[in-house]
Image 1 (cartoon, rainbow over the protein chains, first blue to last red):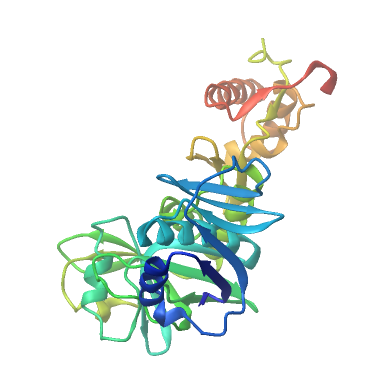
Image 2 (cartoon, helix red, strand yellow):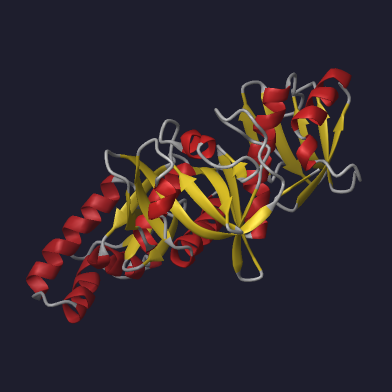
Amino acid sequence: MSIGGVALALSLEDEKLFARAEKRYSAFADGVGIGRPVNVVPDCAGNGSEAVFASDFESARVLVSAKGVEFRGVKNEYALDSLMRMFLSWELLSRNGFLLHAASVVRNGRAYIFVGKSGAGKSTVASLSPAGSVLTDEISLLLKNNGEWRAFGTPFWGEFHAAGSNMSAPVAGVFHLVKAREIRTRPLRGASLLRALLPNILFFSSKTQDHQRLLEIAGAASEEIPGHTLEFRRNRKFWEVLP
Amino acid sequence: MNSAPNGVWQKNPALAWREIDDETIIISPTESVMHELNDTGSFVWKRIDGRRTAADLAALLAENYDVTREVALADTTALLAELASRKLVVAAAEDAH
């Protein structure tokens, strides 16, 4: 499978889990089996002291070490999904990218990124957008490639309850959702945009060097992507005010 | 004590930070806390190197901003005390200066 250009070859022993994963990630599976090997195992042995990246979700753990990538203690698809997000958040550092709590919708060939915490309106935006145009209603993947910021669909969803589309588009802008009575936008640039992005970026490493790298990437995104505050209410008319 | 004019500080090496516009965003990875400094705070932050004293930093501030040395020193020592209380700076080792 491939998410945001990150090719992964998942190896699962548990047949039921494999079937659920196959269904959950079907839009992102290429069937080729080529990619970075990820060994998914049910037991959670080892302390991970040799890991360059490690993070826990309940009793499951992602470990990246010289031995490769391991998802340990994975008993169900939710643990698998959480470890996948954790691993991608770290892996994207080397690819000028990051995961963001945001809905992404493609309109006229460009991706509009709607960022905000739970309840801010991400799923509402997705539900008010045409079928097939939603890259994700919950977790957006942004990365800079060949000088261009692009948004990629992800299989991570929220209330929309549908996998995002496996496609990408150049980013038109980032819109920080704020509930309001009127619909309007205000510019949000540089440091202000970075302040809006950082609390919404998924990140699980505790290492200073990883945080430094993330700051460099998110800082560049804040300087290079047009940002706006979108004062928003549940109404399709919000598209009319977007620049 | 390091809040004195001859006090010497260094940035906490556990922090990640980046300048953007004229501000500085600082992240503490262990606490997942974000701190922000305005333009004069950023000016001083960039020059905290484990060697300059508070008085050295205040002199640089006075040279670059329209403030007297006395005001600059008061502002700088207050800033350093605030940064120290947030563990963004730590006292420099004696052999560092």
